[in-house]
Length: 360
Image (cartoon, rainbow, N blue to C red):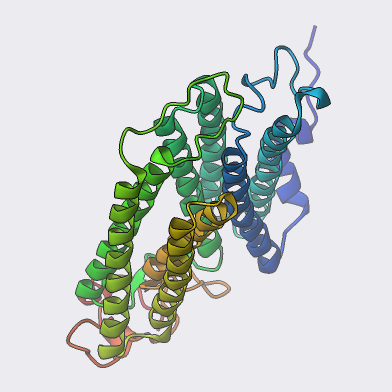
């Protein structure tokens, strides 16, 4: 007895869609932006769950209570807040799925970008499982902290995907010299430490995430004010490095892109600093803490955009191979402030990258 052959849409739905629909670049860009926006929204709503003491509004996982996936209204407002955040995970999955479909249907097919889009999905799945672990461990502060860091990882992949949609697949061409790139990398490392220390402030602070009194909430055993002071110190380090980077970029006459991105990061840091100090001196009101979490997402996004502005991947022209260089570009500028030159006459190896064929 022969096994009936499945229709094409069941065997490979993404290929089926790609064969019949080609999205325009704007559609793909919007799809990846939607995934990025939802990556930030899930952080904000997750913070609201903890700050409203709704972390155990659903006391079990993956179900909400016993055999019930959604729980009941009788479980109260904390249950409603927690289950709403869980349901938003499906919205996030839908946004990421839409980005995957749009990227798969692009012409020409871009394997690297497609894999990056799928990486978002698997980070979402991993973070959802880790979120369940926070419930099963009764909101262990270290587990909760790592939950936020996994969200930062998701935002990182989402930003990279969004950026890469607007670029080509050629090897990256540096726009600034190596010393400037190293300063940017130092800035990114300091920003990452700032975010990690911020999660420790959360773990030691007065918002454990549950108000039922049924469990004794574990906290990080250190005075939260001490960790908050360390967090503020790192914030000033990041501000100082950002200001230094902006002045260096101006001094070497770098392209406007890196200069603008560093100025944007500085503005975001100033706003985040104001929120941080106000929440500290007002004893951490929940609304301001959640706003500060939103600001942390913006700081990290702005930091990534600074790093990504240091290089470019030109889009290939029709009929052109991805590695071909179709226009003259300025030589990377470093601390010496070298003048722009015709990239067609300077091998890319001399610019700090791999040689690329030049279209004559």
